[in-house]
Length: 102
Image (cartoon, rainbow, N blue to C red; front, side):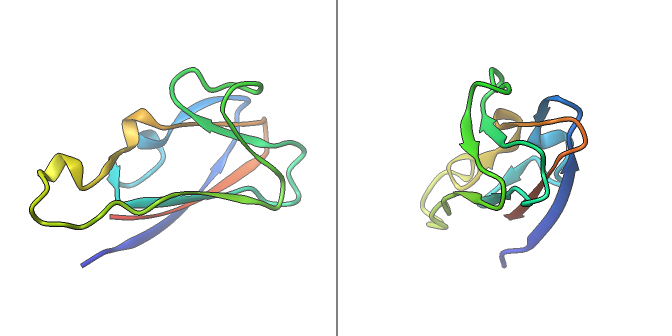
């Protein structure tokens, strides 16, 4: 059974590793939503993400990390994304809402 979770990240003006803010270190899909009240955009990427590097997500928009197949023939490590490899850059006092499923 797939379980869905959601968490809101408050930015510190630096890169934040998803595994440090999610209740799980793996996920099947995720959606990153940026509230329209933010002062800036949010960037999604790897450990090099910054205010100018990464997938830009505009205020009021979202970005979906697509679902991974749930084919039981796949090795367990291929059925999930590893949250330790994803980072978000959220400006100081701005927010990002991460909804994800495991």
